[in-house]
Picture 1: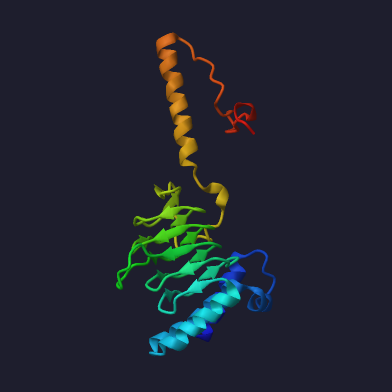
Picture 2: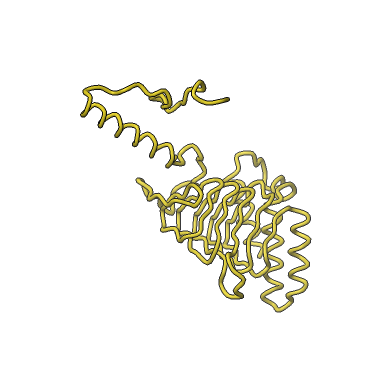
Length: 233
């Protein structure tokens, strides 16, 4: 368990540029405290001390804002950044070196007593506010975008965005040796891309029929910026 605690500290240092020392992390990071409390409550749960395990988990929720059922299985190197509002259900399983941001839910979709929560693979990043629901599997080296709602299995090396979550295969698959996948600026915009594609298709059709493209007021610039004059803002 001490080795797992040290691994959790190192994960926070590696993935949070605001961290200045291991002592600061150990004293001030509620996400780390929540993971440590879970490792204790999970040991109690496996030992048959289910009530003390639930009490430990409840105290951790009050102190950290993170709710993790003591039966959930958390792999080494888990880092919960900012922590507040994270919920991890009873039958959830999380792999190695996973990163969760605030507001993430690994929840269930039914009242069955069996497996009803997600299984998250190794080196997965789940963005702020994302909801991963049901007994689905999130493949290794995948990324779930902020506020995405995922209810279907995700293959390895995928990106998921939107509500409901749309799976996008990576054009450049990641490897186990790659650095943590934390850059939000690289997330795709499926709605914007689809709209741009439709506008280009309309231009092509108008040119083929009329020999020129009609002017349309509502369209983004080449840089992808929409004109504020077209909207009531």
